[in-house]
Image 1 (tube, rainbow, N blue to C red):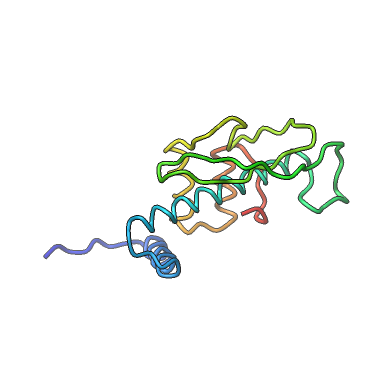
Image 2: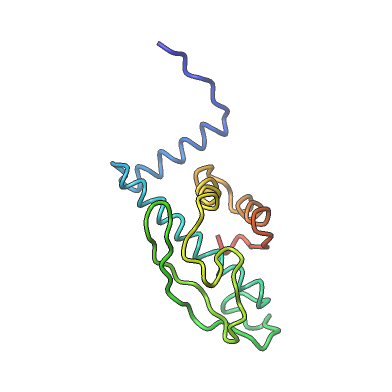
Length: 150
């Protein structure tokens, strides 16, 4: 019988978080896991552009006292995005002037490349803190994202 390799405390903590997530999500099959991955990717692909628009406009939603632009939010557009795990429907924010073009998800982009999916999933799978995810997003996409958007 093979010896179980020693895991670092970080690996053990990460695995425990994954076990908790799987239990809470009632995961019992690979199809369930794929659905969870799709939801995770969809969540990230919606939150990222929202945070980018906050940064571009210079104020967060409902924070009108800090608004210093003649542009503003103008609702969301629905978009179907193809992922390795199937299609997901997401809502992408719009600005009134139509100048906003998110870095994470370009206006005409209809799929997420595998490399980006792996980076998104790795953040959740590693059980990163929101401040660490913020740093990770900044490193990948060059964006400033506050904890409140994650």
